[in-house]
Length: 306
Image 1 (cartoon, rainbow, N blue to C red):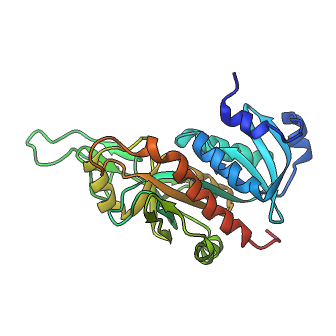
Image 2: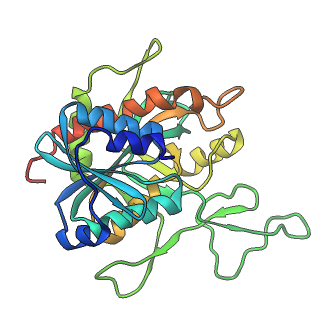
């Protein structure tokens, strides 16, 4: 049985699927990629972006549905990143390999780790870090710390035996890999987003109006974070507004392919900072729409030549 988000993507578009070979041969585009991880985010993006847009075509490649939507003079390519880092990296690269893509956007939810942010707020970070690239180390027998390998020079505070590390990366034009901590959103897209947020209609969650911010830090890793101590440590180390399971993987792939990107995250929960059960199950659907609404305003202001 097809998952509901796949049925929603295909229903009523009146388009036929193309084979993998024909997509490679035609190299359609250029497209602006619009990604989301899982059904609440995918459904929000499709709902918001097809309210003023037109479905044109769909392709199914390796089980992934790619949908062409024409919106505000732009050719968008909507598709799922999948949940977590490996899926997000794999599907971002798949799209870049199969289609001509000028920019990559993502809209979805995240956990808020900045104590000044609230559920429903929308953040658009400039810098993206891995929080789970790390060395897991043994304690010293005398209890005075941890046994560090000769190669490893810690750059950031550890969380017990977990010591954050950088990642080795390389791309076209580099003679050898380099160690990087951060992958940065495109400056021009950030500038457009900064202007666009002033045109977003007020977004309500209960009695509170969501706050929208551009800039700052975000962190990602292959974990659903619902732990107060880790949240406090992660904010102290990276001063990040949000934590999620896909964004830095997407950012790294875009860096490697020299493709500009921007990631919009609405806060569905406090990543363990709450009292009692996590809020994400209750908020994921309305809050997913917050990110999609903000993305819509950004796309409206993206110059047509993009």
